[in-house]
Image (cartoon, rainbow, N blue to C red):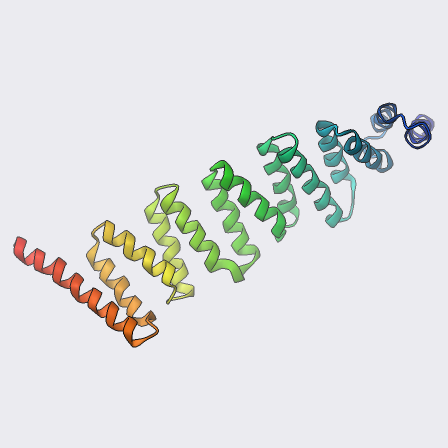
Amino acid sequence: HVALDLNLRVADIQRTKLEQLEESVASYERATAIEEENETALRALVALHTELESWASLVFALEQLGEVVVDPGERGQLYAMAAMVYEEQLENMAKAIESWEVILDFNPNDAASSEALQRIHRSEGNWKELIDVLERATQADPSREVALKLEIASIYEDSLDATEDAIEQYEDVLTYEPTNATALDALKQIYGEREEWDRLIEVYERSLSAAGTDEERVEVCRSIALLYQAVFEDADGDG
């Protein structure tokens, strides 16, 4: 295409020989108007907008180039750059989230994107969205399932006031790790506050199995005995 080649040649001369960066941008944009997916023009626009600190134009060029490149690794890098520009330069968290999500759509195991989304959702107080990202992270890396489920449980409990959902997550943890002290202690706290004594005693009994030393076992037995005494003697007294 004659017009395309001409614009590309003019843009290159403006950029490299004349150092007319803004005029070069205009020529490369004319080239992309002729052929939207022209990789030479898009790569040049990414470089020029970065140099000119034209942030809104830069993210547009990064996204266009991200749709054109074949290599998934490079595509991920381009969307990651777009996400960082949206967050740091344009302060547009919604668009930053969108860019990180694009990466996870084609690479669900991308830890950097998952961690960035977790950080943004945490800082923005997007608790349900944060849980969704954490749940996807458990599927991507099953070795972190217990730690991530504990985090999900604490979000349900502390930020969403969804205690039943928190209980479900703590119980899930105990199916993988029956001796997990964090989950056991959290369930004791919840059932104690709700005065669900039978369930509380059951958790203490599970703690007995989890106790590692004689001292710990004695302490758990003492707690169970005191609980029986307080709850059931009170019940007898009330009767």
